[in-house]
Amino acid sequence: MFITGRIKDMIIKAGRNIYPHELEELVGGVDGVRKGCVAAFPSKSGGADTERLVLLVETRLTEPDAIDALRSRIVEVAKVQLDIAPDEVVLAPPHTVPKTSSGKLRRSAARTLYESGLLSEKGSTLWWQLARLSLSGFGNRVRRLRRWIFDRVYAGYWWTLLVAIAAILWPVVVVLPKRQWGHQAIHYLARAFLWLTGLSPKVVAEGPIPARNVMLAGSHSSYLDAVVLSAVIPGPLSFVAKEELAGQRVAGPILRRIGTLFVRRADIMGGVEDTRSVLEASLAGERIVSFPEGTFTRMPGLLGFQLGAFLVAVKAGVPVVPVVITGTRSVLRGGQWFPRHGEIGVHIGEALQAEGDDFSAAVRLRDAVRARMLALCGEPDLAVEKVSLEATPMITSQRVS
Image 1 (cartoon, rainbow, N blue to C red):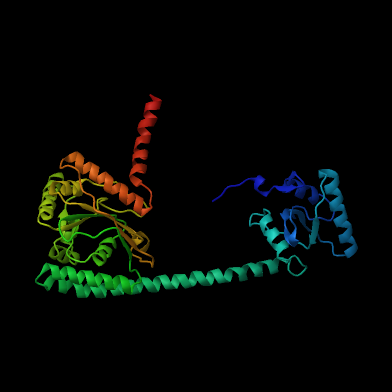
Image 2 (cartoon, helix red, strand yellow):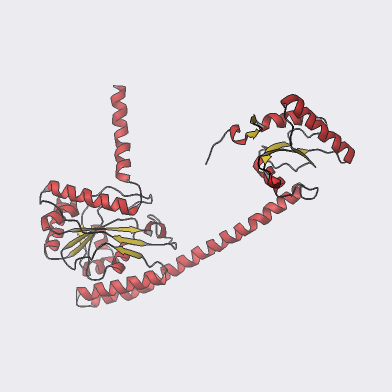
């Protein structure tokens, strides 16, 4: 929304500033002119190099001689009172000057009517303007309807395909004797799902991902992120997920079967134990995938990072690879289950290694990884905004005291 004043409609002619409302009020007082039905606007129609001052005036007069006399009076009044003469006075029948629903003049619409040559006796009537407006909006309504139908057909197809693939994947992963085979099945079926739904991601990799002993830190903006990473990165991946998922009837068995590492977010003592389990998996050579933001929001932006994954990387001596996923928030937003078609991208950065093995080294590694991901994602820094909002009451209270 752009809020403007009357200066927005100001007309500059021969170096003078002309305010339309002043001229309109003056001309509205001339006998034969419908009061409140005068529009003044500039125009460069006809190939003119400078703006011309045009008056669109409504009148009930129909006789040619009376119309010519009224036009002369309008020009004379403008010359005497404002020392300026309009370049053209268009006399039109009632209900020609466009107005808003509240009765205010629409000068830009009047200018469009004038420059399009529609201010004839036929083209200036109200019914003709409304007919043209309806016809001009018909194409937009058709496009919106077509988009509405496409979105719902696509969403139905998306969910049907997802359920069908899940029905195949669940028994395959649970029954296969080797965990690696389960990961291969997930990889190929995830790729097939994204391809069939038109969501195949564009991947940019700054370097290869180690086959073992690595921590992948991914940006998190949708439930679809894990599917995208499974499709993009072949081989076993150990995702770090919240403990609540382990108890789900459908997802739980698959997640446990592929070696998902569950963590407790609210229980401090349990969280310490879970971090130890993640460390043991890292020392065993697992490729661990962590979403250090911990959650995602509908609002674009990168949240603050939790430190747990970086403490594990420092203690295990493994590098951290920043992975930025874009587009999934638009495809499947948080709090909604209505998928939309869109473009997905994955940028795999260079691996970063911690300098040291203490707590401060983990903090430096976290900050370095986050800075790199913030530069790649192109979204605002929500951690800075949160700090600013939390600091505002403290500043206020200090000023008051």
